[in-house]
Length: 318
Image (cartoon, rainbow, N blue to C red):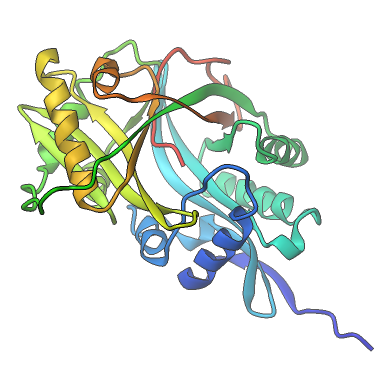
């Protein structure tokens, strides 16, 4: 007589090593190179101001997580409105449980919890051509919430030369400088995240983070391993806040970020063009479009959902 496994739907327990194993086992099956979300990175994600395990439901089976989705708070300006949203990410199901509806269960539970907590909607991210697009659409239909694809981010990439010598640690980025640079975004940017001081401090000091600053401009990124053989690391360029910097000096600031990424062990740099920042320095330094693109979906529970297709946005992408 077989014994049914003990199974429960509950808040994530904080077992980061187990979550890292689950994510790697699941995403190793993907055709594209996925990031390896290591335990310290995942732990640091939940140190983001306002993050809570209650917004990240998981299914446990015999004490091990077999399905998970993470929810993290974001304040986002959508046109004239400011919305308190959640970014849902890392939707993961173990290989042995795929195709059984576990992903839909945790995503629907996440929506229920986010609405109960007072959030106005959520952001979702899916690799172009990946099965997650259909899964998210089915999840939204099941949860009876709208789903609008507002952007497709085209990634650009270039290889990095190994660092010839160790670089001295850069001065710590001042939170005030980061906030000041973020406030200088062009008003034409249709969708843009807003920062509190605590959130900006986390961003400037995140796990694997690299930041450079010059005359009121700030660039940030982080170095992460990739699920690949042999092991490799990528520099993910994130905040491009150089609107106040002379255009002629932006290439030098970007080169400084790339040099520090190479010194941290990255062999490639990748960046999504979201049309909110001058892209010429990336072209000048050899960034070229890659095959990877990412769909961004916006869900607003009630009211106007925002533009069907934005012309520009400033968001962190998962």
